[in-house]
Amino acid sequence: MAEQPPSHLAEAAINREAASVDAAKNSDYPMPFPRHLPHPSNTQVRRRAMKIGRLLTRHFGPMAYRKTRKQEIAPGSYARPLRLMFEELGATFVKFGQLMGSSSGVFGEEVSNEFRSCLDAGPSVPFDEVRRAVETEIGRPLEDVFASFDPIPVGQASIAVVHKAILKDGREAAVKVLRPNIEQIVSTDLDLLDPLIGFIARQMGATAGPMVQVLDGFREQIAEELDLRNEARAMTHFGKILREVDLPKMTVPVVYEEYSGMRVLTMEFFDGVPIDDLTEIERMGFDPKPVVEQCVRGWFLTAVRFGAFHGDVHAGNLMMRTDGRLGVLDWGIVGRLDSFGLQFFRQILQAALGDESAWLDIANFMIDIYGSAMSPDMNDEEKVKLVRTMMEPALTRPFGEVSLGEMLAAVQEQIAVAHGVESSERKVRDIYRRWRAARKFPEHTQEEFGLGTEFHRNSMLLAKQLMYFERYGKIYMSDTPLLHDKEFFAELLEY
Image (cartoon, rainbow, N blue to C red):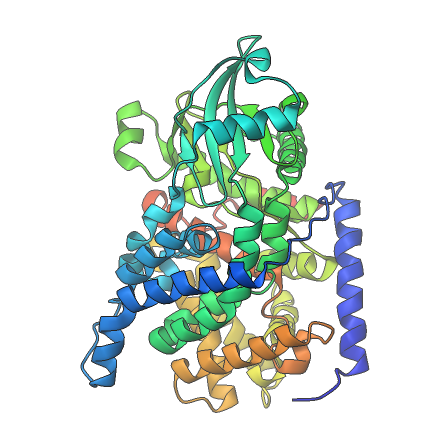
Protein backbone atom coordinates (compact mmCIF):
# COMPACT_ATOMS: atom_id res chain seq x y z
CA MET A 1 0.00 0.00 0.00
CA ALA A 2 1.54 3.27 -1.08
CA GLU A 3 2.31 6.01 1.44
CA GLN A 4 1.24 8.76 -0.94
CA PRO A 5 -1.55 8.61 -3.54
CA PRO A 6 -0.43 8.79 -7.19
CA SER A 7 -0.92 12.30 -8.51
CA HIS A 8 -3.09 11.27 -11.44
CA LEU A 9 -5.48 9.44 -9.09
CA ALA A 10 -5.73 12.43 -6.78
CA GLU A 11 -6.45 14.61 -9.80
CA ALA A 12 -9.11 12.17 -10.96
CA ALA A 13 -10.78 12.35 -7.54
CA ILE A 14 -10.85 16.15 -7.75
CA ASN A 15 -12.30 15.97 -11.26
CA ARG A 16 -15.01 13.56 -10.09
CA GLU A 17 -15.98 15.94 -7.29
CA ALA A 18 -16.15 18.87 -9.70
CA ALA A 19 -18.14 16.80 -12.17
CA SER A 20 -20.63 15.88 -9.45
CA VAL A 21 -21.24 19.54 -8.69
CA ASP A 22 -21.52 20.39 -12.39
CA ALA A 23 -23.97 17.55 -13.01
CA ALA A 24 -26.16 18.71 -10.13
CA LYS A 25 -26.10 22.29 -11.42
CA ASN A 26 -26.94 21.19 -14.95
CA SER A 27 -29.95 19.21 -13.74
CA ASP A 28 -31.18 22.16 -11.67
CA TYR A 29 -31.24 19.88 -8.66
CA PRO A 30 -30.94 21.98 -5.49
CA MET A 31 -27.67 21.31 -3.70
CA PRO A 32 -28.22 20.18 -0.09
CA PHE A 33 -27.70 22.42 2.88
CA PRO A 34 -24.29 21.57 4.36
CA ARG A 35 -24.60 19.87 7.72
CA HIS A 36 -21.80 18.77 10.02
CA LEU A 37 -22.53 16.27 12.75
CA PRO A 38 -21.41 17.17 16.28
CA HIS A 39 -18.44 15.44 17.84
CA PRO A 40 -19.65 13.10 20.58
CA SER A 41 -18.12 13.42 24.02
CA ASN A 42 -16.05 10.64 25.53
CA THR A 43 -18.86 9.97 27.97
CA GLN A 44 -21.40 9.54 25.15
CA VAL A 45 -19.12 7.19 23.25
CA ARG A 46 -18.38 5.16 26.37
CA ARG A 47 -22.07 4.78 27.31
CA ARG A 48 -23.07 3.79 23.78
CA ALA A 49 -20.14 1.37 23.51
CA MET A 50 -21.15 -0.28 26.78
CA LYS A 51 -24.69 -0.77 25.48
CA ILE A 52 -23.41 -2.25 22.23
CA GLY A 53 -21.14 -4.55 24.21
CA ARG A 54 -23.99 -5.76 26.38
CA LEU A 55 -26.18 -6.44 23.34
CA LEU A 56 -23.37 -8.21 21.49
CA THR A 57 -22.83 -10.48 24.48
CA ARG A 58 -26.53 -11.17 24.87
CA HIS A 59 -27.33 -11.84 21.22
CA PHE A 60 -24.08 -13.24 19.83
CA GLY A 61 -22.51 -14.81 22.92
CA PRO A 62 -24.04 -18.28 22.40
CA MET A 63 -23.05 -18.28 18.74
CA ALA A 64 -19.50 -17.18 19.51
CA TYR A 65 -19.22 -19.91 22.13
CA ARG A 66 -20.36 -22.58 19.66
CA LYS A 67 -17.84 -21.26 17.18
CA THR A 68 -14.97 -21.59 19.68
CA ARG A 69 -16.13 -25.15 20.31
CA LYS A 70 -16.01 -25.72 16.54
CA GLN A 71 -19.69 -26.59 16.52
CA GLU A 72 -21.63 -26.18 13.30
CA ILE A 73 -23.58 -22.93 12.94
CA ALA A 74 -26.51 -23.02 10.54
CA PRO A 75 -26.37 -20.53 7.64
CA GLY A 76 -28.45 -17.46 8.39
CA SER A 77 -28.62 -18.18 12.12
CA TYR A 78 -27.05 -14.78 12.81
CA ALA A 79 -30.03 -12.94 11.26
CA ARG A 80 -32.44 -12.92 14.19
CA PRO A 81 -29.92 -11.88 16.89
CA LEU A 82 -28.52 -9.21 14.60
CA ARG A 83 -31.99 -7.84 13.83
CA LEU A 84 -32.93 -7.75 17.51
CA MET A 85 -29.69 -5.98 18.32
CA PHE A 86 -30.16 -3.39 15.55
CA GLU A 87 -33.72 -2.63 16.63
CA GLU A 88 -32.69 -2.19 20.26
CA LEU A 89 -29.91 0.20 19.23
CA GLY A 90 -32.18 2.10 16.80
CA ALA A 91 -31.17 5.13 14.68
CA THR A 92 -28.13 4.32 12.54
CA PHE A 93 -28.38 0.57 13.07
CA VAL A 94 -32.00 0.41 11.95
CA LYS A 95 -30.92 1.99 8.66
CA PHE A 96 -28.60 -0.93 8.03
CA GLY A 97 -31.47 -3.23 8.90
CA GLN A 98 -33.65 -1.48 6.31
CA LEU A 99 -31.10 -2.28 3.62
CA MET A 100 -31.03 -5.94 4.60
CA GLY A 101 -34.81 -6.11 4.83
CA SER A 102 -35.23 -4.84 1.28
CA SER A 103 -32.38 -6.62 -0.50
CA SER A 104 -33.32 -10.29 -0.68
CA GLY A 105 -31.26 -10.62 -3.87
CA VAL A 106 -28.08 -10.03 -1.86
CA PHE A 107 -28.88 -11.27 1.64
CA GLY A 108 -31.33 -14.04 0.74
CA GLU A 109 -35.09 -14.25 1.24
CA GLU A 110 -34.87 -15.70 4.74
CA VAL A 111 -32.56 -12.98 6.05
CA SER A 112 -34.45 -10.25 4.23
CA ASN A 113 -37.76 -11.35 5.74
CA GLU A 114 -36.20 -11.28 9.21
CA PHE A 115 -35.23 -7.63 8.77
CA ARG A 116 -38.53 -6.47 7.25
CA SER A 117 -39.63 -5.05 10.60
CA CYS A 118 -36.79 -2.49 10.38
CA LEU A 119 -38.63 -0.65 7.60
CA ASP A 120 -40.81 1.09 10.16
CA ALA A 121 -39.04 0.52 13.44
CA GLY A 122 -38.45 2.94 16.25
CA PRO A 123 -39.76 3.85 19.69
CA SER A 124 -42.39 6.53 20.11
CA VAL A 125 -41.43 10.05 21.18
CA PRO A 126 -43.35 11.68 24.07
CA PHE A 127 -45.91 14.05 22.58
CA ASP A 128 -44.72 16.93 24.76
CA GLU A 129 -41.34 16.72 23.01
CA VAL A 130 -42.99 16.55 19.59
CA ARG A 131 -45.09 19.61 20.41
CA ARG A 132 -42.03 21.49 21.66
CA ALA A 133 -40.07 20.67 18.48
CA VAL A 134 -42.88 21.77 16.14
CA GLU A 135 -43.64 24.98 18.02
CA THR A 136 -39.95 25.89 18.18
CA GLU A 137 -39.52 25.33 14.44
CA ILE A 138 -42.59 27.22 13.22
CA GLY A 139 -42.48 29.84 15.97
CA ARG A 140 -46.18 29.55 16.86
CA PRO A 141 -48.35 27.53 19.25
CA LEU A 142 -49.61 24.25 17.78
CA GLU A 143 -53.24 25.36 18.06
CA ASP A 144 -52.59 28.47 15.97
CA VAL A 145 -51.56 26.35 12.95
CA PHE A 146 -53.41 23.05 13.23
CA ALA A 147 -57.11 22.38 13.71
CA SER A 148 -56.09 18.98 15.07
CA PHE A 149 -52.82 17.14 15.70
CA ASP A 150 -52.94 13.41 16.46
CA PRO A 151 -50.61 12.66 19.41
CA ILE A 152 -50.24 9.04 18.23
CA PRO A 153 -47.67 8.79 15.41
CA VAL A 154 -48.61 7.16 12.11
CA GLY A 155 -44.95 6.41 11.40
CA GLN A 156 -41.96 5.69 13.65
CA ALA A 157 -38.79 5.48 11.60
CA SER A 158 -35.14 5.39 12.60
CA ILE A 159 -34.46 9.12 12.82
CA ALA A 160 -37.92 10.72 12.88
CA VAL A 161 -41.57 10.23 13.76
CA VAL A 162 -44.56 11.24 11.63
CA HIS A 163 -47.88 12.54 12.97
CA LYS A 164 -51.11 13.17 11.12
CA ALA A 165 -52.60 16.64 11.49
CA ILE A 166 -55.22 18.92 9.91
CA LEU A 167 -54.29 22.50 9.08
CA LYS A 168 -56.60 25.39 9.93
CA ASP A 169 -57.67 25.58 6.27
CA GLY A 170 -58.77 21.91 6.32
CA ARG A 171 -55.83 20.33 4.46
CA GLU A 172 -54.66 16.99 5.83
CA ALA A 173 -50.96 16.99 6.65
CA ALA A 174 -48.19 14.62 7.66
CA VAL A 175 -45.78 16.26 10.09
CA LYS A 176 -42.31 14.70 10.22
CA VAL A 177 -40.28 15.53 13.33
CA LEU A 178 -36.67 14.56 14.02
CA ARG A 179 -36.10 12.53 17.16
CA PRO A 180 -34.65 14.42 20.13
CA ASN A 181 -30.83 14.43 20.24
CA ILE A 182 -30.71 12.29 17.10
CA GLU A 183 -27.63 14.14 15.83
CA GLN A 184 -25.62 13.17 18.91
CA ILE A 185 -26.81 9.57 18.76
CA VAL A 186 -25.94 9.18 15.07
CA SER A 187 -22.56 10.84 15.48
CA THR A 188 -21.71 8.50 18.34
CA ASP A 189 -22.90 5.46 16.38
CA LEU A 190 -20.71 6.36 13.41
CA ASP A 191 -17.65 6.47 15.64
CA LEU A 192 -18.49 3.01 16.98
CA LEU A 193 -19.53 1.30 13.74
CA ASP A 194 -15.94 0.71 12.68
CA PRO A 195 -15.07 -1.89 15.35
CA LEU A 196 -18.61 -3.27 15.36
CA ILE A 197 -18.62 -4.00 11.63
CA GLY A 198 -15.21 -5.62 12.09
CA PHE A 199 -16.74 -8.00 14.65
CA ILE A 200 -19.73 -8.72 12.41
CA ALA A 201 -17.43 -9.37 9.42
CA ARG A 202 -15.55 -11.96 11.47
CA GLN A 203 -18.77 -13.66 12.55
CA MET A 204 -20.66 -13.52 9.26
CA GLY A 205 -17.87 -13.79 6.71
CA ALA A 206 -18.95 -13.14 3.12
CA THR A 207 -22.46 -12.00 4.03
CA ALA A 208 -21.00 -8.91 5.68
CA GLY A 209 -19.56 -7.66 2.39
CA PRO A 210 -22.48 -5.38 1.43
CA MET A 211 -22.59 -4.00 4.99
CA VAL A 212 -18.90 -3.10 4.84
CA GLN A 213 -19.39 -1.36 1.50
CA VAL A 214 -22.45 0.66 2.44
CA LEU A 215 -20.62 2.29 5.34
CA ASP A 216 -18.60 4.45 2.96
CA GLY A 217 -20.27 7.79 2.42
CA PHE A 218 -22.82 7.06 5.14
CA ARG A 219 -21.72 9.99 7.29
CA GLU A 220 -22.35 12.43 4.44
CA GLN A 221 -25.67 10.82 3.59
CA ILE A 222 -27.11 10.79 7.09
CA ALA A 223 -25.93 14.34 7.75
CA GLU A 224 -28.08 15.44 4.80
CA GLU A 225 -31.05 13.48 6.18
CA LEU A 226 -30.79 15.26 9.52
CA ASP A 227 -31.67 18.57 7.90
CA LEU A 228 -35.27 18.21 6.76
CA ARG A 229 -34.93 21.25 4.51
CA ASN A 230 -33.00 18.97 2.15
CA GLU A 231 -35.90 16.55 1.97
CA ALA A 232 -38.33 19.42 1.39
CA ARG A 233 -36.20 20.68 -1.50
CA ALA A 234 -36.03 17.22 -3.05
CA MET A 235 -39.79 16.70 -2.85
CA THR A 236 -40.50 20.06 -4.43
CA HIS A 237 -37.96 19.41 -7.18
CA PHE A 238 -39.19 15.92 -8.09
CA GLY A 239 -42.82 16.95 -7.75
CA LYS A 240 -42.18 19.59 -10.40
CA ILE A 241 -40.62 16.97 -12.68
CA LEU A 242 -43.66 14.70 -12.35
CA ARG A 243 -45.92 17.54 -13.44
CA GLU A 244 -43.88 17.86 -16.64
CA VAL A 245 -43.74 14.19 -17.70
CA ASP A 246 -46.30 11.52 -18.55
CA LEU A 247 -46.29 9.49 -15.33
CA PRO A 248 -49.82 10.01 -13.97
CA LYS A 249 -49.70 7.11 -11.50
CA MET A 250 -46.73 8.57 -9.56
CA THR A 251 -47.20 11.23 -6.89
CA VAL A 252 -44.95 13.13 -4.45
CA PRO A 253 -46.40 14.95 -1.42
CA VAL A 254 -46.66 18.72 -1.63
CA VAL A 255 -44.49 20.50 0.93
CA TYR A 256 -46.12 23.11 3.17
CA GLU A 257 -43.03 25.27 3.42
CA GLU A 258 -44.46 27.86 5.82
CA TYR A 259 -44.77 25.12 8.46
CA SER A 260 -41.44 23.40 7.80
CA GLY A 261 -37.80 23.89 8.75
CA MET A 262 -34.59 22.11 9.69
CA ARG A 263 -36.18 19.72 12.21
CA VAL A 264 -39.82 19.69 11.10
CA LEU A 265 -41.31 18.89 7.70
CA THR A 266 -45.02 19.44 7.09
CA MET A 267 -46.38 17.97 3.87
CA GLU A 268 -49.46 16.62 2.13
CA PHE A 269 -50.87 13.50 3.81
CA PHE A 270 -51.12 10.34 1.71
CA ASP A 271 -53.44 7.51 2.75
CA GLY A 272 -52.58 3.98 1.63
CA VAL A 273 -50.56 0.83 2.28
CA PRO A 274 -46.98 -0.27 1.50
CA ILE A 275 -46.46 -1.44 -2.08
CA ASP A 276 -45.65 -4.98 -0.94
CA ASP A 277 -48.80 -5.45 1.15
CA LEU A 278 -50.33 -7.92 -1.30
CA THR A 279 -53.37 -8.79 0.81
CA GLU A 280 -54.48 -5.21 1.40
CA ILE A 281 -53.82 -4.11 -2.19
CA GLU A 282 -55.95 -7.01 -3.43
CA ARG A 283 -58.69 -5.98 -1.01
CA MET A 284 -58.51 -2.43 -2.39
CA GLY A 285 -59.15 -3.85 -5.86
CA PHE A 286 -56.08 -2.41 -7.62
CA ASP A 287 -53.67 -4.05 -10.04
CA PRO A 288 -50.23 -3.02 -8.74
CA LYS A 289 -48.25 -4.21 -11.78
CA PRO A 290 -48.76 -1.11 -14.00
CA VAL A 291 -48.08 1.11 -10.98
CA VAL A 292 -44.78 -0.64 -10.25
CA GLU A 293 -43.84 -0.54 -13.94
CA GLN A 294 -44.42 3.21 -14.01
CA CYS A 295 -42.39 3.61 -10.82
CA VAL A 296 -39.44 1.87 -12.50
CA ARG A 297 -39.76 4.12 -15.56
CA GLY A 298 -40.02 7.23 -13.40
CA TRP A 299 -36.95 6.31 -11.38
CA PHE A 300 -34.87 5.72 -14.51
CA LEU A 301 -36.20 8.93 -16.07
CA THR A 302 -35.05 11.13 -13.21
CA ALA A 303 -31.67 9.38 -13.03
CA VAL A 304 -30.89 9.53 -16.75
CA ARG A 305 -32.38 12.90 -17.64
CA PHE A 306 -31.64 14.83 -14.48
CA GLY A 307 -28.73 12.96 -12.85
CA ALA A 308 -30.62 12.62 -9.55
CA PHE A 309 -32.80 9.84 -8.14
CA HIS A 310 -34.66 8.70 -5.03
CA GLY A 311 -32.03 6.86 -3.01
CA ASP A 312 -34.20 4.71 -0.75
CA VAL A 313 -37.11 3.10 -2.61
CA HIS A 314 -37.74 0.31 -0.11
CA ALA A 315 -41.33 -0.79 0.40
CA GLY A 316 -41.83 1.47 3.41
CA ASN A 317 -41.36 4.48 1.13
CA LEU A 318 -43.63 3.36 -1.73
CA MET A 319 -47.34 3.54 -0.94
CA MET A 320 -50.32 2.27 -2.92
CA ARG A 321 -52.72 5.11 -2.30
CA THR A 322 -56.46 4.64 -1.87
CA ASP A 323 -57.02 6.30 -5.27
CA GLY A 324 -54.84 3.72 -7.07
CA ARG A 325 -51.80 5.94 -7.55
CA LEU A 326 -48.32 5.40 -6.12
CA GLY A 327 -47.12 7.73 -3.40
CA VAL A 328 -43.33 8.10 -3.26
CA LEU A 329 -42.34 9.11 0.27
CA ASP A 330 -39.25 9.91 2.35
CA TRP A 331 -36.92 11.89 0.09
CA GLY A 332 -34.23 12.22 2.73
CA ILE A 333 -31.76 10.20 0.62
CA VAL A 334 -31.22 11.43 -2.93
CA GLY A 335 -28.49 10.12 -5.21
CA ARG A 336 -26.68 12.60 -7.44
CA LEU A 337 -24.70 11.22 -10.36
CA ASP A 338 -21.51 12.93 -11.48
CA SER A 339 -20.75 12.99 -15.20
CA PHE A 340 -18.73 9.75 -14.93
CA GLY A 341 -21.47 7.85 -13.12
CA LEU A 342 -24.18 9.21 -15.41
CA GLN A 343 -22.23 8.17 -18.51
CA PHE A 344 -21.72 4.67 -17.10
CA PHE A 345 -25.41 4.38 -16.28
CA ARG A 346 -26.39 5.46 -19.79
CA GLN A 347 -23.95 2.99 -21.32
CA ILE A 348 -25.55 0.14 -19.38
CA LEU A 349 -28.93 1.06 -20.85
CA GLN A 350 -27.44 1.41 -24.33
CA ALA A 351 -25.83 -2.02 -24.10
CA ALA A 352 -29.02 -3.63 -22.83
CA LEU A 353 -30.91 -2.11 -25.78
CA GLY A 354 -28.47 -3.65 -28.29
CA ASP A 355 -25.50 -1.27 -28.62
CA GLU A 356 -22.64 -3.78 -28.85
CA SER A 357 -19.96 -1.10 -28.68
CA ALA A 358 -21.06 -0.03 -25.19
CA TRP A 359 -19.93 -3.27 -23.52
CA LEU A 360 -16.20 -2.53 -23.72
CA ASP A 361 -16.72 0.89 -22.13
CA ILE A 362 -18.74 -0.77 -19.37
CA ALA A 363 -16.00 -3.34 -18.79
CA ASN A 364 -13.31 -0.68 -18.56
CA PHE A 365 -15.44 1.41 -16.22
CA MET A 366 -16.02 -1.58 -13.93
CA ILE A 367 -12.29 -2.24 -13.84
CA ASP A 368 -11.86 1.36 -12.70
CA ILE A 369 -14.53 0.85 -10.04
CA TYR A 370 -13.22 -2.43 -8.67
CA GLY A 371 -9.52 -1.88 -9.23
CA SER A 372 -7.28 -3.04 -12.04
CA ALA A 373 -6.80 -6.43 -10.37
CA MET A 374 -10.25 -7.45 -11.55
CA SER A 375 -8.82 -8.58 -14.89
CA PRO A 376 -5.05 -8.10 -15.05
CA ASP A 377 -4.38 -10.34 -18.06
CA MET A 378 -7.58 -10.07 -20.09
CA ASN A 379 -7.80 -8.67 -23.59
CA ASP A 380 -10.76 -6.53 -24.66
CA GLU A 381 -12.77 -9.48 -25.94
CA GLU A 382 -12.34 -11.38 -22.68
CA LYS A 383 -13.28 -8.33 -20.61
CA VAL A 384 -16.48 -7.85 -22.58
CA LYS A 385 -17.39 -11.53 -22.33
CA LEU A 386 -16.91 -11.54 -18.56
CA VAL A 387 -18.90 -8.38 -17.86
CA ARG A 388 -21.61 -9.22 -20.34
CA THR A 389 -22.08 -12.69 -18.87
CA MET A 390 -22.52 -11.17 -15.42
CA MET A 391 -24.72 -8.19 -16.28
CA GLU A 392 -26.78 -8.81 -19.40
CA PRO A 393 -29.19 -11.45 -17.98
CA ALA A 394 -30.17 -9.18 -15.07
CA LEU A 395 -31.08 -6.42 -17.54
CA THR A 396 -32.82 -8.37 -20.29
CA ARG A 397 -34.32 -11.54 -18.79
CA PRO A 398 -37.56 -11.65 -16.76
CA PHE A 399 -37.29 -10.84 -13.06
CA GLY A 400 -38.33 -14.38 -12.15
CA GLU A 401 -35.30 -15.84 -13.94
CA VAL A 402 -32.48 -13.63 -12.66
CA SER A 403 -30.87 -12.46 -9.45
CA LEU A 404 -29.04 -9.17 -9.06
CA GLY A 405 -27.50 -10.62 -5.93
CA GLU A 406 -25.94 -13.43 -7.96
CA MET A 407 -24.67 -10.87 -10.46
CA LEU A 408 -23.00 -8.84 -7.72
CA ALA A 409 -21.62 -12.00 -6.14
CA ALA A 410 -20.11 -12.98 -9.49
CA VAL A 411 -18.33 -9.63 -9.66
CA GLN A 412 -16.96 -10.09 -6.15
CA GLU A 413 -15.87 -13.65 -6.92
CA GLN A 414 -13.95 -12.49 -9.98
CA ILE A 415 -12.18 -9.90 -7.84
CA ALA A 416 -11.33 -12.54 -5.26
CA VAL A 417 -9.88 -14.83 -7.92
CA ALA A 418 -7.81 -11.99 -9.37
CA HIS A 419 -6.43 -11.24 -5.92
CA GLY A 420 -5.67 -14.89 -5.29
CA VAL A 421 -8.13 -14.94 -2.40
CA GLU A 422 -9.37 -18.48 -1.90
CA SER A 423 -12.48 -17.70 0.09
CA SER A 424 -15.09 -14.96 0.02
CA GLU A 425 -14.73 -14.60 3.79
CA ARG A 426 -11.05 -13.72 3.46
CA LYS A 427 -11.94 -11.20 0.75
CA VAL A 428 -14.47 -9.48 3.00
CA ARG A 429 -11.92 -9.20 5.78
CA ASP A 430 -9.39 -7.80 3.31
CA ILE A 431 -11.94 -5.22 2.13
CA TYR A 432 -12.64 -4.30 5.77
CA ARG A 433 -8.92 -3.87 6.51
CA ARG A 434 -8.45 -1.65 3.47
CA TRP A 435 -11.60 0.35 4.29
CA ARG A 436 -10.35 1.03 7.82
CA ALA A 437 -7.03 2.27 6.45
CA ALA A 438 -8.79 4.52 3.97
CA ARG A 439 -10.98 6.03 6.73
CA LYS A 440 -7.86 6.86 8.77
CA PHE A 441 -6.40 8.86 5.88
CA PRO A 442 -9.36 10.66 4.27
CA GLU A 443 -7.03 13.05 2.44
CA HIS A 444 -5.90 10.12 0.25
CA THR A 445 -7.88 8.51 -2.55
CA GLN A 446 -9.74 5.21 -2.24
CA GLU A 447 -7.64 3.88 -5.10
CA GLU A 448 -4.49 4.19 -2.98
CA PHE A 449 -5.80 1.49 -0.69
CA GLY A 450 -6.72 -0.89 -3.49
CA LEU A 451 -10.43 -0.12 -3.24
CA GLY A 452 -10.87 1.43 -6.66
CA THR A 453 -14.04 3.52 -6.48
CA GLU A 454 -16.28 0.62 -5.39
CA PHE A 455 -17.32 2.54 -2.28
CA HIS A 456 -18.49 5.60 -4.16
CA ARG A 457 -21.66 6.65 -2.35
CA ASN A 458 -23.88 7.14 -5.37
CA SER A 459 -22.71 3.94 -7.06
CA MET A 460 -23.81 2.08 -3.95
CA LEU A 461 -27.13 3.95 -3.95
CA LEU A 462 -27.70 2.92 -7.57
CA ALA A 463 -26.99 -0.72 -6.79
CA LYS A 464 -29.23 -0.58 -3.73
CA GLN A 465 -32.21 0.73 -5.68
CA LEU A 466 -31.82 -2.00 -8.30
CA MET A 467 -31.92 -4.55 -5.47
CA TYR A 468 -35.16 -3.01 -4.26
CA PHE A 469 -36.65 -3.10 -7.77
CA GLU A 470 -35.63 -6.74 -8.08
CA ARG A 471 -37.81 -7.52 -5.07
CA TYR A 472 -40.85 -5.71 -6.49
CA GLY A 473 -40.18 -7.28 -9.87
CA LYS A 474 -40.26 -10.80 -8.46
CA ILE A 475 -43.54 -10.00 -6.68
CA TYR A 476 -45.40 -8.25 -9.50
CA MET A 477 -43.42 -8.63 -12.73
CA SER A 478 -41.86 -12.10 -12.61
CA ASP A 479 -42.42 -12.56 -16.36
CA THR A 480 -41.14 -9.07 -17.27
CA PRO A 481 -37.52 -7.85 -17.69
CA LEU A 482 -36.26 -4.75 -15.89
CA LEU A 483 -35.90 -2.90 -19.22
CA HIS A 484 -38.94 -4.37 -20.95
CA ASP A 485 -40.24 -1.04 -22.29
CA LYS A 486 -37.52 -0.62 -24.92
CA GLU A 487 -39.28 2.25 -26.68
CA PHE A 488 -39.39 4.27 -23.45
CA PHE A 489 -35.71 3.69 -22.67
CA ALA A 490 -34.62 4.41 -26.24
CA GLU A 491 -36.43 7.74 -26.14
CA LEU A 492 -34.96 8.44 -22.71
CA LEU A 493 -31.41 8.02 -24.03
CA GLU A 494 -32.04 10.67 -26.69
CA TYR A 495 -31.91 13.42 -24.04
